[in-house]
Image (cartoon, rainbow, N blue to C red; front, side):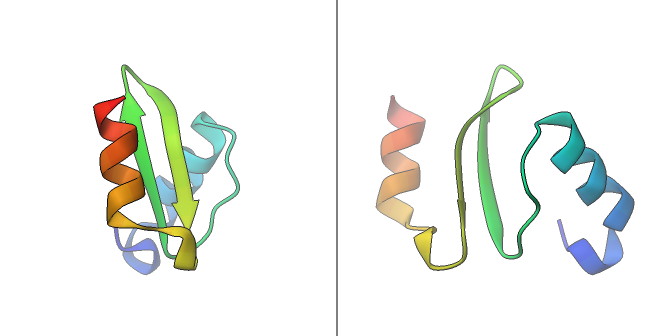
Length: 54
C-alpha cells in the first residue's frame, strides 16, 4: 500500500499485528500471522523467498 494514500489502513495493519510501522516495509503473512517483517535496507528478495518457502 502507499502509506501516504492509505494512512488509516497502515495504522490498522500496525495495530492488528503489533508491529512498528516503517516505510518502506515488507510483511509476509501466512494464515493471518506475520511470519516475516523487514524494513528499509533489510528487505531482500532472497530473504523473503526463503521465508515464503518455510
